Every structure is written in structure tokens, then in C-alpha cells.
Length: 172
Image (cartoon, rainbow, N blue to C red; front, top):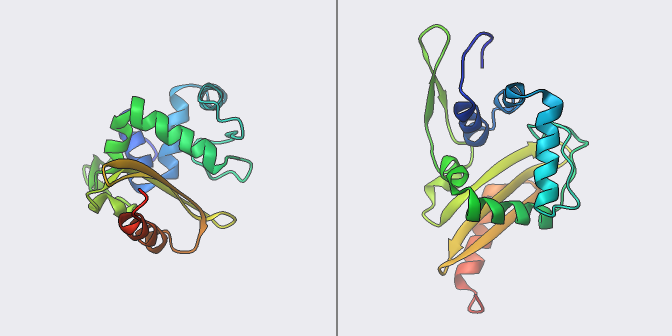
């Protein structure tokens, strides 16, 4: 993103979800005061009974942010049931924004699962301390299945292994 570029909140959300543009996530906080934005994020976590979650920034880069797989599952369930348009954004690939000089800025999905028909939606992440992360939902045998990874060295490979196991597991 560039200084002086005028971008809607919807397009900032798309850039944040599709390509994990942290500048876009941070820019979203300017629609309100940053503190108020974070208060609303933490309030929503409390409403969803995400009792082990606290947000210190909007992008997820702060090492002070805390959560658990159980809390991420609650968030994924809420999004799937109440805000499916968020998951739809994560299924998109190329997203273009006009730049300040008339050129188009291309945002490409870093989450390669959008190519898999079973993928409902989700978000990737990376921190040196946390490794590769993923919060996602797939449909396997007509059931929504959440796959949440922390500290992966290769989330793509890990998820493919999990999906293959789920597809052959007779107990599902």
C-alpha cells in the first residue's frame, strides 16, 4: 500500500485476507481510533466466548496476541454460520486495486487451498515464533471440518496429509 492511496474498508479487508497484507489490516484501524478498533475485536472475542484470546493489534503480528485452537474454532464456527462472505473472500485469488499512479496493484492469495473444491475458507499466518499457522474450514464427506494449525513448518503439506486421512477415515 502507498501513502495517499484511497482504499475502502472492504478492499482493505480483501487485501488483509487474500494476501495477508499487514499494512491493510493496520489501515482498517483508522476507520475508528486504533484503540476503539482493538476494543471491538476483544469485545467480539468475549461475545464468542473466546476466553483465552486477547488482541493487541489488528494484523496478528504482535507477540502479545494470545489464542487457542479452541477459541479459533469458535471464531471459525461464527464466521461460517453468520458471516460466510468473509470465507468467500478467502476463496478468491487475484484481487486488483488501482494504485496512486494509475497502475493496478495485484494481490494474490497466499493460501493455496482456494484451489481445492472442499475449501470453504480460512486464513494463513506466519510469525517466526509461531511458525506457519492456519485457521480453515473444509467440507469432507458433506461435513464442515475445521483444520487449525500452529507451529507448522509446511502448512500446505500438513493440511494435505490431514485431508487425505479424513477422506479415508471410515468413522467420519
